[in-house]
Image 1 (cartoon, rainbow, N blue to C red):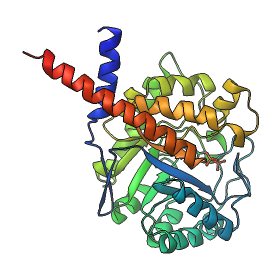
Image 2: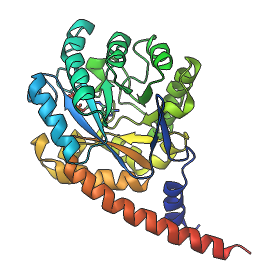
Image 3: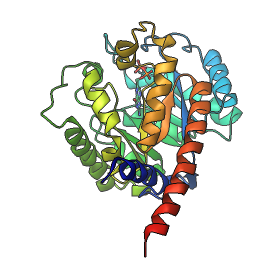
Image 4: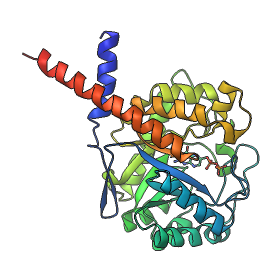
Length: 316
Ligand code: HH2
């Protein structure tokens, strides 16, 4: 395969994904015919880049509205940090107390917005789904709470299964960041197991989105390999979400130590991920992500149309 053909086939796989460009969330079908931007809302005192800023429910709702105005399709509400330095696990009661009022108010005030809850606990997921959340984003991919699958299946929730290793306190560290020659192969195999576990619990295949877990149990070199070969994650046949926003590998590459200042590096990583098949993007800074991904998508889409036309012409 020549370099030109390789690029064309990458573009074509972006154009014609095996999941048909749709994500089932309850009784809705979310069209992934353009990049979906998920704004991060950390209702925590200790998240790595915005801890404490939106701990108060009023400030959280204001931030959510700002992100929707800037083009967010979904808001991901989290009440427990996985930060690399000293994530403090919280119990389910405290996490519910942080997250539920925000989910409730988001559903009331922003009825057109998809609401996701970022939790590894089935109790918290169940309560958030009762309040009207549409999606459960589990950074353990249903590893840490065996009841997660049945709760999500029962509610017909959309599900994000992220790759990670170890406990909540360990997963943001390098405690389990040891891989053989093929880090991407290991991540894909472990993520595939999580998809199988969700299916076995009764979650519908078309409700599942997969996420390779950038920076989770991965040193910078591992995250870069995973992003470079993201099409192998997409080959699992489910839409791919990436969460690169402000992460440590961007700080290491750019020398920008302040996490909130890593927006340009984040944009670079998101755009490359789009060309490798990612369709959903979890970000702190919505406006730059929305604009960059929309422009990049227009180029990829038109490039894909050209490549498809050439392919059709080349066939006898
Ligand atoms: N990253 C974080 C948290 N949740 N969920 C998914 N699906 N993918 C991710 O990459 C991901 C995630 C960590 O980022 P953040 O929420 O900003 O920090 P903290 O865990 O400190 O709250």
